[in-house]
Image (cartoon, rainbow, N blue to C red; front, side, top):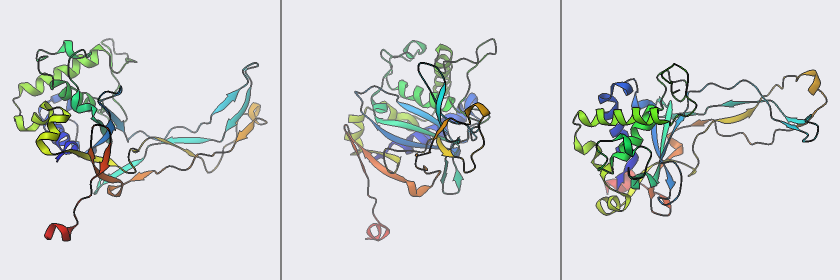
Amino acid sequence: MINYTEQLTLLMRDVVTRVPTLSFINVDDVLVFGRFGRAEAEGAFATCHCLTMPASEPGYYFWRDRRTGEITRRSEWFVTKSPTVTVGDQQKKYLISFTLPRFCDQSLGRSRKERFYRRATDAWVAKLDTVIHELYHIDPEQKGIRRIEREDGTCCSHSHGPQFLATVARMVSEYLDTSPQPSTYDFLKHDFDTLEALYGGVSGTSFRPFPTYPQRFQERLAEQPPCAPELALVDVEPWREPTPRASFTDEHLQIRQFFRASSRKVTLPTRQEQAA
């Protein structure tokens, strides 16, 4: 089988060596993983997840009376944290997930990015665009997701606006203009059915238990600070959320085979079976 997330990682390593805007990225800081997503369903083709955001300031939820507007109850204090993901001895700073098989079947036709390409006749370029799109989300200061600035220096509230799409398209052309080895990106030229026919299956790294993956989470403060005097008599809802996993390692990764309508864990042979 073709390990699709492995191929995407190798492609990213090549991209960051050829595209100056992305040259600050150390791909060893990035973990690429697969998530199941039907081709015919709506949804993202890929997503960039940041693991370097610091814990939030302490806060709490509160509820108001619809009629009076007064706060009637609140939650206990909590902070929002980023999990850690360590593979081998490398702590990851970003995760990039790809939805399979949906990602494999995308094309430029009728997409928002089609108008930015001189190579618009090559449907597979849509997938290369998505790869570079997700890499471009990585903040050069690695403090979160890149903030997109307008020409006047103010930040744009729409991260996927025309300026963002045009910049990504420019980087795609820059990469292809360097004449990379076709073997680095040829796998993008095939849709999911063709990949299955060529390789006998499509697999990729995923988190277990599938389909969960590390995300920002909320944690109750062990020591609850006092609230403002006007909230002293407000009812406090006890924290009922279970403590989520805050640390992930190799043990939480697995290889899965993806199908049109499902996925399954791939059981790798043991050392004894390999030797036999």
